[in-house]
Image (cartoon, rainbow, N blue to C red; front, side, top):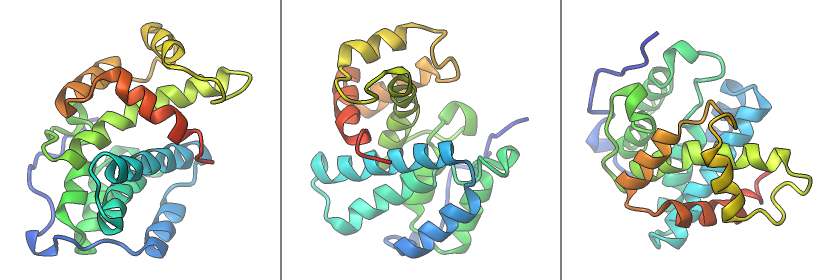
Length: 199
C-alpha cells in the first residue's frame, strides 16, 4: 500500500491565513479520530507545535493556532482510513479553503511515506515532533512516575534500544532534526515538560 501523495502543491494561495475555528477543528477531530491513544498523540503534537510557535518563533496567537491546528489534524485520517493517510484530511482541508501552509505541513510530516519534502518552519517542526513525541510518551508509560523526573539521558537510552517502541523510526527522528536545524538534545528537553501537561 503506497501512501505517496504524488503532488507537491496543496491548497489555494488565496486562502492563506484561513483556519478552522477551534470548535470546528474539535468536531472534526472527535468525529474522525476514535482511538484514545491516537487522540492523545495528536493533542500532544498540537501542544508542542503551539509552544514552539510561541516560545521559539515569537508568533502571535493567530499564528500559534495555525501551528497547533497542523499538529492537531496531522493524523486525522489514520484511525478510520489508514489506506488514505494523508490524502483524506488534505482533501477535507482543501475543500474547506484552509491555509495551504497548514495543509502542506500535514502532507510533509513523513517525507519518506508521502513523498513531500518539508520546506517551511511549520513543515519541519511537525516532522520533528511527530516520531520523537511518540517515543517519549511510550517511555513515560513504562516509568512508575510517568513524566515526573524524566530526563534527557533516559530518553536517549531508549532511543538507542531498537527494540523499544520499535515502530518509531530513529532514521526519521535524525532526519527531521537535521532538516529543522535543531539539536536532538534540545528537542528532547523541549518536549518532556510541555508534553507532560497534555492529558
